[in-house]
Each structure stands twice: as C-alpha cells, then as structure tokens.
Length: 213
Image 1 (cartoon, rainbow, N blue to C red):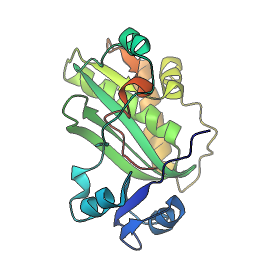
Image 2: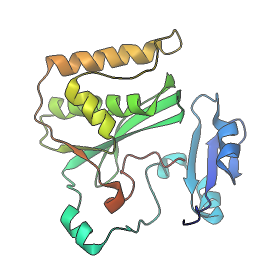
Image 3: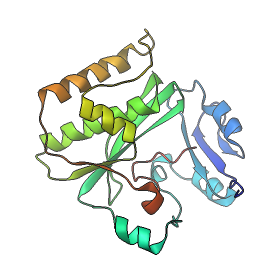
Image 4: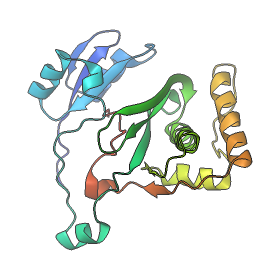
C-alpha cells in the first residue's frame, strides 16, 4: 500500500489564518466560520506562497497532474472536450457548509458560484451545480457540453429528483427552496446539453474543483 502524501493547508479566512500541517488543524479554523477560504497544497513552500497571494488566484488550480493509467487507457479515454463548462461542489462536513460553482473548462474562468449554504451536502451541491449549468447554457443558447465528476448527481438530474436523505430544517430552508426550484426547472424545461462524467483518473481534478481536502 502506497504511503499517503502529506498535504499542507492554507487558510486565507478563518478563525485563525496561515498554513496548517493537518486537515484537522485546518478544519478547526474553518468550522462555523462564514465565508471561510482555504485550499490544500502538496508542499509547505507552495502553501506559504499561496498565503501571501489571493485566494481567488488559487481555487481550482492544481499542481501538475500525472495519470497512473496506462498509455492505452489514456488513448481510449482521449482528451477533454474544451467546448464545455465544468461544475463542482465543496462541503466542509456532511452535512456542513456547502458551495458550488461552474467554470469554463479550458480557461477555468468562473461563470457562477453560489453559497456557502448552511447544512448542505456535497451531493446536493453537485446536483444544484449541474442544474444551474444547464439553465445557464440554455439561456445563452450554447452548444457546449457540461462536465461533472459526480455520477450520483447525474442520476438525480436524469430522474428529475434530489434523492437526498438530508431532512429539511429551519437552518437549511433556503437551500431546500433552491432544490425545489431546481427540480421544478428540470420538470418544466427541455435541454440539449450533454452531461458528461469527468475522467478524474485520466485528467486530474475537474477544473471547477475548489482544491480543498
């Protein structure tokens, strides 16, 4: 079994800011902090450099990715279609504060971002991100495809249902109102956008990734 590589965590906004050497230390700084900003890095120097910079310049930007797949497998999968947008979600806890966003796959330019929402889950965020992306592409009459790395969210969208086990509470009322709107949109709109699973093992993290844990 290969040894898990150590990560370093930069916190730009939190109870305490700086570079932390464990996920637990990072988590303590962002838990229950409105608008927390953080990201993981593979080296201390990279994390320290990022801390001196701007959070928005680092989210969704990963270090160079080297696939562990064979050349034959990579050839079979091919390259991403850059005439596309990519969506992803991030949740600190399950449930926990959740946000989602969509970006241009090639440039990583952010097209939309929502959250953070109280008491959400990653699956809900992935679902909402897809629907948000579908609505945006339809509004713009775009022929671009949409990438997501969540098979669960794809299945929910196809079923036009958010099959979450999370219970409605006063705390997540606003989030569930958004879920209801998303389901209503799916039931009352047709779309030609093709939803495609992002091949993480071949291409690395999806461009919309928040670059966290």
